[in-house]
Image (cartoon, rainbow over all chains, first blue to last red):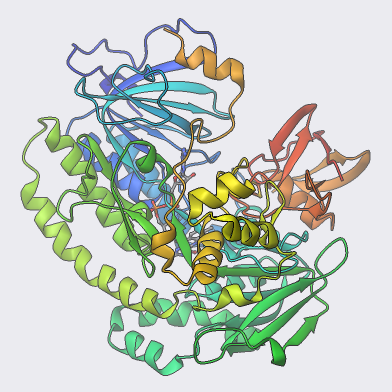
Length: 506
Length: 82
Ligand SMILES: Cc1cc2nc3c(=O)[nH]c(=O)nc-3n(C[C@H](O)[C@H](O)[C@H](O)COP(=O)(O)OP(=O)(O)OC[C@H]3O[C@@H](n4cnc5c(N)ncnc54)[C@H](O)[C@@H]3O)c2cc1C
Ligand code: FES
């Protein structure tokens, strides 16, 4: 790690990564490129930009860099994780980025970003493009509060599970698959003694495999999509992934649990925790047939998810344009294919933020964004290498896109949402209340939030946003795209008032 | 990972250094962490990655810490609000 490469935009390098702090508690940093997210995309962006000669600061919310795919187990690694290639590859990525001079600051969650010198304009809740140039980012966490001024930003904030509420989904033990994966891979703890996995997506299999490795039992896996043959066709056309699939599938066959298709979870059952799940087959329109339900009991963990949705809070707060692409995760940040520049000057986006595609395309888009960010600040011509990277990214990205169209959430899931189903977990808003708001005249995500408070809690709609859009679309007979999404408010994450005051002072 | 002991709601529980507080509680078969603000229904870990705020507990006296992000340490005190 070479912090002396950090210097402030347009000024001579001070030779130090940061000047003495005027606000005790908030450590200031200045750099050419600030990367948010230390996953596959962020780490490769940081490496590429730093190798071009820019000073780079990387902020990440988690206690350790690596993101989701390259998550790094704690200091004393798990026996089962030690041998895992993902862990060692991730460690190598981190080391390479640091060797190139990037300063990685984990345990720092970005809660605000502003154009220019860091002063939010009075009355505005989000940043907008500024002529002044540059940005100020604020982050806090166990790593300590920081304020980073940067000439360019790369947003590589990844994705999170795409969930649709169902009755009982708030019971302890009910989680999305990503939560089960993190418990098993990071902590070596299965989400329960006996886990039922359901939903859709190629991700369900690796989760099951991690749970087995962590010593858990799998009751069953239910994949909503029942077009097995078409999925097999995609696999057959992409021999490069056969090895990976075989590796993933091996522990599954060893355990001999069943992978069922064409049914979804319509309720979690239990008093103070989940003890059983009710499932229903999907009809040809993708609607659960509630007349033919069946139950699976003796479970204490239930993982249900329908793929991932990108984290677009930061790019949205920065004023970037977003497009709707359900297969790619819903609302995704628009980025130019050869630079991964967003529609806001100085802001680049990479990895899952620009559409769900998996780790390999994320690595490549991160590198393209890092090179383009450096080039935009006058650090050489990177167009030749970027052209080559765009070409290399084409196939894995096309594969991910083809696979994703298979795992879009079934169209009629909202049919299982009863009126007493909690939609917004933060504020305990039920589907009945949302339906009442719609009857009263609310007609989109914003209206539903104003009328019912759904999406107004601490999570700012990260959890319920997708399900809410599905419910509103189903009730109104419109496209989820027309429902829109709620623009995040600053702070993006709860932050102590004193920290916010100290950070914004000056 | 080395074995350590944490105290959860007054009970001493075994844990392994480096695991998250959320994992330690789940491993100890204590999935309920709090009650929801309005309906008072039991809640536990949801997203497992720091963005849903369902897993808020008091850790070493500091309230509203996310159990899914904080790693356990020997002698740590955790209070749930179940
Ligand atoms: C739980 C989970 C498990 C996954 N496991 C696999 C797997 O086993 N195999 C596979 O092929 N794919 C997996 N994926 C898909 C995964 O998204 C990609 O493979 C890959 O990790 C994408 O890289 P990325 O850099 O775009 O995002 P990520 O790796 O997700 O990295 C994003 C980073 O941004 C950080 N971040 C987000 N918001 C903020 C903020 N406001 N402030 C600071 N930091 C922030 C996060 O902490 C995170 O470290 C998983 C996804 C999830 C959500
Ligand atoms: S479980 Fe979602 S924040 Fe911890």
